Length: 163
Image (cartoon, rainbow, N blue to C red; front, side, top):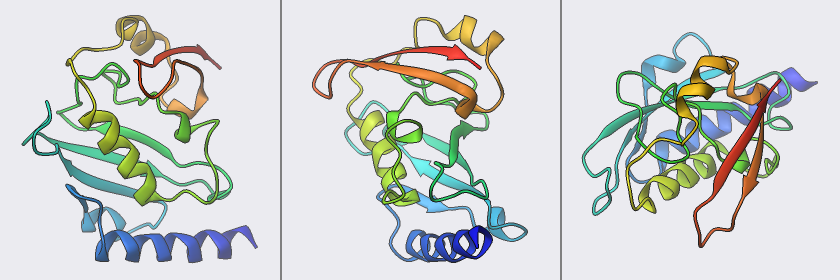
């Protein structure tokens, strides 16, 4: 049952991303030729932001429990954005990727949240614990237990425990 639900949901989201992508986002068509459970989304920094004109890639991996389980999402490639909630290994501290995930969310809503997170940045810098985290974390960002501090209007601080 989960396999059929997964395939149907991913096909629907794939079509939505191809036909109506969020601003600055494009599905890397080659990434879905062999499997529907791993996508690469090409992203360009929004106009008028610190990331204007920069190009990034997001990797989405979907488990067999999607959409009930959030996708694994991380930046990949040579250009990882320098941002207070993005570690240099591509891991993203964003609550909708973990505890605030809902099956009502989609790849498009995740992309919009990441665009918004980058666009609201006032200073390019890594998280203060970047070096330690990158040396000690699991390769899968979903294995990190994040604690979110702060509200939307003030800086969010992320703490974690590697599991």
